[in-house]
Length: 51
Image: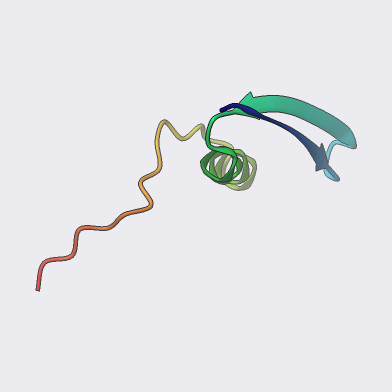
């Protein structure tokens, strides 16, 4: 299922409308891009720690 979302950027005073099957993951990508100025190709929420 796809979700439609609306983000507002205080920095540029604009709204962004998008759609995603995974809105939480998409928000992480938006935030990463805003904070670093770089696009993130993928984010993995699972970590592989070996003990």
